[in-house]
Length: 292
Ligand SMILES: [Zn+2]
Image (cartoon, rainbow, N blue to C red; front, side, top):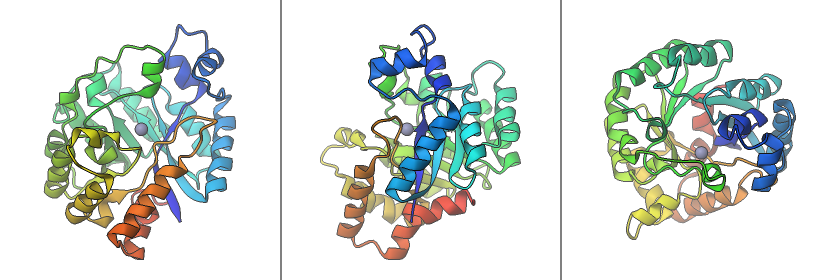
């Protein structure tokens, strides 16, 4: 069984919000050589066909720009047994508290996604504490992108990306997360370059989980490191119950990134990870955090 803890829902509204002067979602899609997403219902159906094709039971769909929760909510409402709604939130943005409450309560999203390097705030900021309070009230998780942040689509469209990578510090996240033992926390891509800090944070704070998603190309910053070595350390420190498999799949026609799954299964084999632990990483932990 496979659950994918990290997929992006690149909806029509997402493309319109991301590049408002680019002539609309169809024009942006054609520039990117992507299939236009169509309505959120259509995009959700496409994801279902894709997940079925690969035997993926459930997937987290991330609304990947503030203001796009509605798109993911529409897809989740049609397939509540298959999709789990995550949304990007900017606690430093206008009307942040109201937007947060709407996404959690009205649209019933199950994880708030923070990108501090993109939006310019610290993870031990009082505004982040408010996010944790709201997550605790709604039984939601907090996902916090740490480390290197490159947004492929922004690059391709030539959008400015003046990110402050210092703000994606897992240790600052741990400081806040320790105050909210009921809120599960997810750090994607093993901390994306702040691997040592992510392990220290996970060691200090038992609610911190690491997602395994993407090609993890950040390992090029970590001299001599391999993905196998990353898994070995993460298993030793966070343990199998705090690793969540994810792919970081995002657009069509590329679709679900089966190669990520195959590589990570191969690594599990070479590390001699037990069947039970593999089940936890590829499906069970996601099920525990986001019961269907
Ligand atoms: Zn991602």
